[in-house]
Image (tube, rainbow, N blue to C red):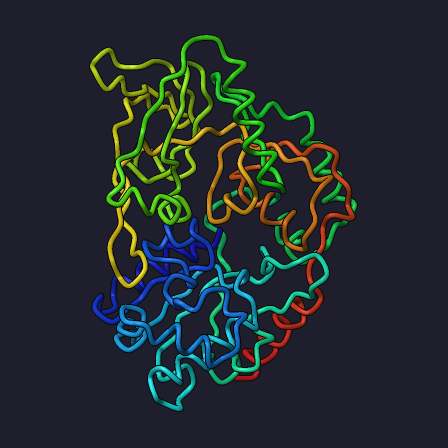
Length: 391
């Protein structure tokens, strides 16, 4: 919550659009910076194939053009990019661009927090972070750390989060988190969103709760620029190709509509009615006090070989539950977290730091053991700090 994505957007906006490529490790994060996933930009699949094969993939028409055109490559949420993938990209960049400079002479602008979500890995693989990549040191010369928290303004909560981020769970931290179990995080008919570690739990919860509501389902189908590529659009768009709502459905805004009024990505609300006109658009009462009829919005993304894809859909998704991965980068007004199934270092911190305040947070079955920070990441940040004190 230090304004990383905000700053990154300003940086992207100040660079020449023709040769600047904004990317991120996940579709959700890519949407925040208005770009594509790093994998989509690279065009080398999972990057697990031998280097020669990856270079061939990157030399395909369409893919090769943007490797050559790119002078500034922006990567957000770097913590989830695998170190081996980073090394592979660096080698591919040199090969395709036929230049021996680090990353083939492309300027890298990288953003994220390694104490958040680690790279996705198979059960028995060890995690290799980007800073552990062989080519990291020659690619990254300047490091800057944002330290002023913008998402929360309650000093107690900020210092609690700083401790959890570093994997420290003092008695005071544990007791504050346990006390939140009795918080009434509901206001005005808007329930707390449950953050889940597994995305299957999310879909089940949302479907079940929608079914339990009385009344008829109002379904809204998306209008996609290319229906054949619906899977690709699904991966990058924050809203699905079909949105189903009912009166009383708990929803979350999936796009900034009016920042000054609090109608931002992640804003929570409840459906209080539907228009009588042919489209039957939903009327939503938001926690920020605004009640508004929600109209269809348009998302545009770069697809493979630089083609633009778009989806038109309501900027709403069901919000009884959301996965921790999908919540990355969001600020949520009222959150409920069950921390018994946390399975990665950094996950507890990402989940807790989505909340804007302690009052808007309810932690169930808290166990101090889930507060973990990866030792190699802590060491990386210690070295950075020591180095910066010296320079």
